Each structure stands twice: as C-alpha cells, then as structure tokens.
Image (cartoon, rainbow, N blue to C red; front, side, top):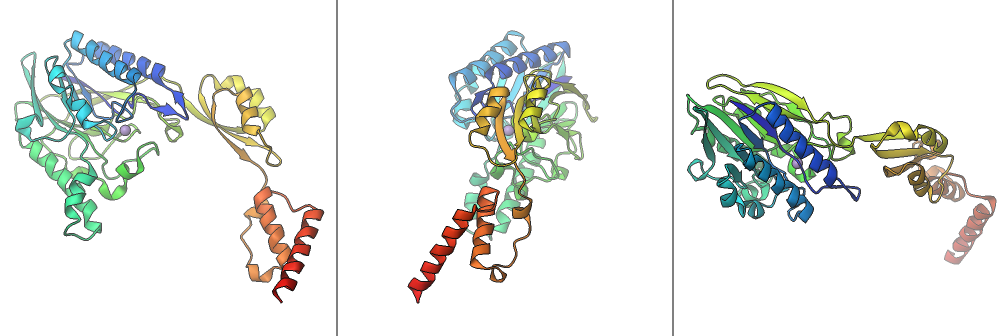
Length: 384
Ligand SMILES: [Mn+2]
C-alpha cells in the first residue's frame, strides 16, 4: 500500500505582508500530480492546513478545491488538525468530507470514535491511528492544581506518549498500521517559523514511545523535513514552502511511504519544485545592484553595508531589489562594540561621548560635546 505524506501547508500565511496564495495553489497542484505519478492509494495530511484560525476566503478556496480534486480521483485522504487549525472549523466539515472518503480529525478522540481509521484498498487493510495536535493548555491546566510547575511539561509529554500507545492498541497484525501525529518530538530541529510556545523543548515527546507495531509514524508540526530516530520509521514531511527566512536552503518535499503489514515501511522523498526560494544577501548598494538579476524572483533578506546610518536606505534598497522583504543595515561600530569599560573609570564627558557613539555610530561633534560640558557644569553648580 502506498501513501503520500504531507502537512504544514499553512495556506494563507503572509511573508512580511506578501501573499503566498499563488505559490500555495501551485504547490497543491504539484502534490496532486506527485500523488498520481506515484500511484498512491491514500493521502496523509498531518495538520496546519491553514495558517490561521480564521483563514481568508482565498485560503479556504485552495484547501476545499484540493479536497474536491482528491474526491474526484476517489483518493482516500486522512487529515489531522494542527495547532494553527481551528478545531471547530475543521470539525464543521467532518461529516460532509467523510462521505467523500476524506477523514478529518480535528482533535484527539478515542479509537472507537474515529481515533483509528480502518481502510480497505484493493483487498488490503490499513489501520490509521490519528493524533491531532493536543493543546498544552488542555492537559496542563488540570495539572496546575496539584503539581510543581516543572512537572507540567513532563505530564504533557507523558500523556501524549500514552495516547500514542492507546491508539496503537487497535493495530492489527494483518494490517498496515500507521500513526499520524501533529506533535513536537525530542531531538528534532526547528526552523524558527513554528510558534515558539508550541515547540518549547520541555513539551517534546520521546520518540522511543512510538509504537513498535507501527510500520510508519507520519509527523507534522516542524517545518524542516527530517527523519527522526524511533523504534519504527518516523519522519516529519516538513512544510511545503519555505515559510520564513529560518527555512531558507531547506529543500521541501513530500514522503512516499510504501508499506506492507508486519515490516518497516520504505520511504522515498520527492522534492517539491513549486514556490519561491528565500535568500539572505549582503553587500554595498553598488554590489547589490550589480547582483540583482542573479537573485531571480527569490524573496530576499538584505543586509546593506554602509559607512554610517543613512535615512531612507531601506526604500532605496527596495527600489533596486523589489523582492527585498527585510532590510538591515551594517555599518562599522567596532569601537562601540568593544567591551564596556567600567563607568567609574571614565569622566562624565567620556561617558557622554561613549553614549553618543553607541547611538549614532560616530563621536559627538565638537559643539555637542561643548554643550554637554556646559550643561554638566550647570547641573553640578545647581546641586551644590
Ligand atoms: Mn506548522
């Protein structure tokens, strides 16, 4: 049985105010194409379909059109909720989509209430255990009553591990058994574009607790594509686009999973070609202008090197590089970066000069220094 594992679409996400809808539309088309080229039997979508609890109409159109396509192809699809998805919003679609063999699970439920989905495809059986995002707050709120704070996160990861075990209790030896989870696991690498509170290390789940009886654990939540060490094959598919500058140079992918009962699944990464790349560049205005064409249509984070701060420089950079989304300036600050000497060893005039240097990148002009001296004298006399 063949599966396509994707997730963390974040449809509707803006990058510094720029829409990525057209890229997201292309990437979803590409995923459908890969699914048909790879002849998969089932799609696995591991959460964070949307970026926001209240997605834009355009974002909804993309996701619902994707579902229309998979329904038209009679391709069974399992969708779990991520921390960015509104559970009730996804739940509103559950009954409608179930009729189209699209199994939506916004929140964790018991195996007999849909927590384990049994599929039969061409005479083969699959048991798909699903663990949508479990809100830290839901578990931790109750613990606050009785336990020391440092145990809250342990309780969270322990509970999530128990849930994985409970769901895996419904696996069957003659079936292909998979676990889908939107969760942060130990020793996985983040990209900086996930919500900090939701990837906080103390809440990470121990992958050694993943069920050995699973042929594969399909993970969502972290945006860097990566395999994770576990008693069975387990991987984050990663996000479909480079969502923020922390993800530049990450080659995005989907995972094709070939699984038979009773043995570890075989995995194959298929690279995603759609979407614009994100890139950090650095140089003087002249250098940047000269290199402009080589940046193609990449979204840019630009560090421009100047002698001293120049008002309006960011606008000048955007004129020559319209895809510059972030502009930072870099100018010589070597003196001000030197370790601060003890203030007690400096005269008031020197302290002021050092302050001025830090603020303006240059020592104070003579007239300003003199004016400071006058004010200081006056203040001393006034306090006598
Ligand atoms: Mn995500």
